Length: 310
Length: 108
Figure 1 (cartoon, helix red, strand yellow):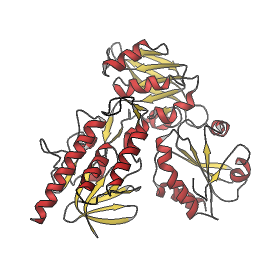
Figure 2: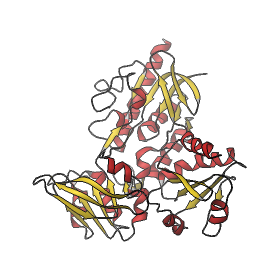
Figure 3: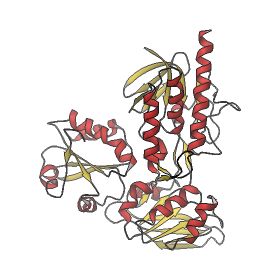
């Protein structure tokens, strides 16, 4: 059976595409990937998604979006896409060991946490180094932790970690934070949080077997001076990288790996393939902008499919 | 939780996992952990497929923090794969079914 539209990804972009294409009777098939619901499933309170004056948790919001898509007939598969072939039509998508054919594809694979990329970091990942405060904060009751970064994600994670940790130090490479004013205020006023300005991690110290992380070596970006800070955990929140490996050499990507879309459109370099959400957003990266671009991709796909029929 | 997946506790961990003569997969999870919830069905399906060949169980780290502490778990989801009572492999975060089963297959 040939599908009209396959959506790869199940964050706000993918599921909004699913809602719109389902309502257009295009019977979308959504591959949810290894992290159904996307990045919002590892956040706590979402306070800036319109329509939720009391806030909503990330997992709740994603449950609601999934239900809304399913209500209109979207099929959601808990499967990870292993391979795509968009070099000829119909496009082919392989997931869960099966091959699927489709007339159009909406790419909504989003982004994942970027890491610093040091050997000592990967060695201690899961043994004191983490990229998910909501998953791992629990293990740091009355411990001292660091958060690396200066944007909203880092500030939110720092505040979240104060529920468990005895102290939270933000390690930031510059002398001012990048996050929103409201988050900066919360951080600066918080009795458990301090900021280590002009600092970057030079090395993670510890052993993966047994003790795990015991501290870090910090480098001062101004003086170059190296200092040692003892801590039990380090949470990395330095931004995200687009999940575009599936499409390498099949579609135009920019230098950073984001899928390139045409201005004011979700159209990619391949006709019939559309992109929405963080995979193509180098600027905004919000849940609501992802949802908005998911809508654009659905409408673009709908028009494309109509043009095939006429 | 699937019918084939054992709920592991402080009381049964030794009998079910450490004393098992089959390879054992242990999933450390919690209800508030999004990626753990996502991984749950994968672990359950492995439990069903490997019924009789391997033991598959889950430790809720909220209910049984001592087991998590014993194995120095500091990140979830964490999957530990035991053979003859010893940890052979540890997988952290979202992993595919094939990644898990390839390790179990090696230990069968």
